[in-house]
Amino acid sequence: MIKQFDVEFLRDMDEPTLLTAARLKAEYRVSLADAMIAAYVFRCEAVLTHKDPEFDILKGLLEMEALPYESKAGG
Image 1 (cartoon, one colour):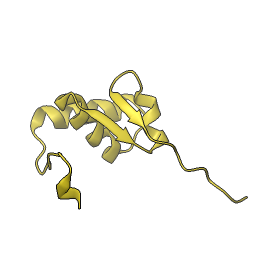
Image 2 (image 1 turned 60 degrees about the horizontal axis):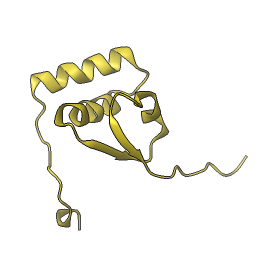
Image 3 (image 1 turned 135 degrees about the vertical axis):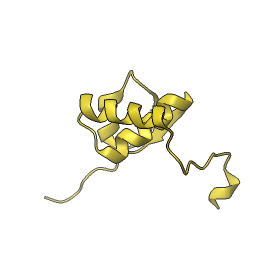
Image 4 (image 1 turned 180 degrees about the horizontal axis):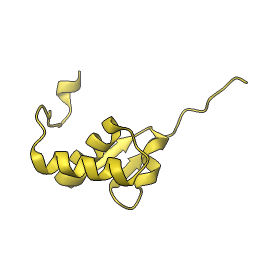
């Protein structure tokens, strides 16, 4: 089903993207995985579409579209 979307699959990380991820990880409270995702978005001038409130710290740095977050039910 995912092959129906117009997406590019990324399998390798070049050095500039790795250094961008390292800078993001060092400067912001994001996980390494989120820093790597954000670095790809930044370097490719793409739009980050997500449902992860942890990306909110990068608002203004990346173009992003936040989908509705799931509320945490329970208590």
